[in-house]
Image (cartoon, rainbow, N blue to C red; front, side, top):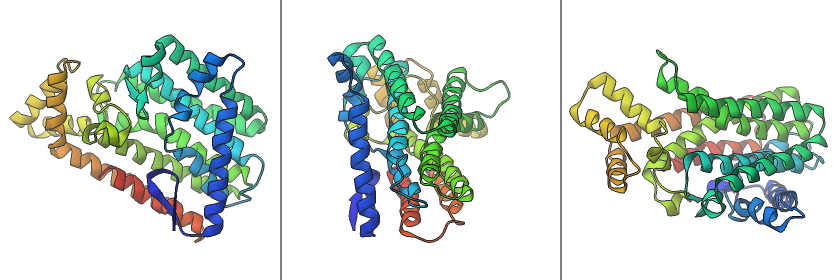
Length: 336
């Protein structure tokens, strides 16, 4: 039993393990090649997060989904590079929007070089992803364009906030389906599609990716509150400090509106105050870590991971399917 990919995913089949490891190695080489520039400074900035590591969650899903067709098909590895480049580009932009100081255990690009360089480096990565995508055919371009539209729409919805009368949790689900679910779904779709899998299999894996992506972000929301920077690779409470309403906070506000408990109201008032103050930020984290809303967010994570698992039911039993099921368990474990 060998550990590969994010969260210590274990692959029990030697042939599958070899395919996945070879594919991930090729993706890593592809990422380094795609982020090279004739301008040394651009190469340094573009490879900043590539070299910092990361889970490579999306490329792993491409490799596992490709097992339902021909995993050696020529478009599999390039499509995995495309989704990871797209993901990396969004991280550069997100860190600017969130004023994050740390990403993947290293200083964020905006901290090191400033906001302008970080934004432009993200744009550079989008351009390189598009260049690779052009060789994968018009259908791949269309799929990626639709996913990217959903990703940006999700980000805009998050920035705009819910409309009057809209349930904030439902609004947040729309945000996550776009921001996170869309690209995770495309990872599964590209893997199966590039490998020549049946359309039914492609659709099943796409739906699985969508649900797993939401569960993955829910787990991230829990980690933002519950973990330290060593565990998550990011500054704890970054979203909290910026006033971004993640799932534990939304569950807290929902509970406050329903029960009206004095301690919940006081915590909401603290969250509404200036959390750029370190003492307030530390106190808010402490209180949220002990609050039932955090456990509710964990239960939400489990529910979406279970939905992702059940989506896989129509697929034939095989080692790749078992690995995809194990990823659902790993996401739940990640949320504690």
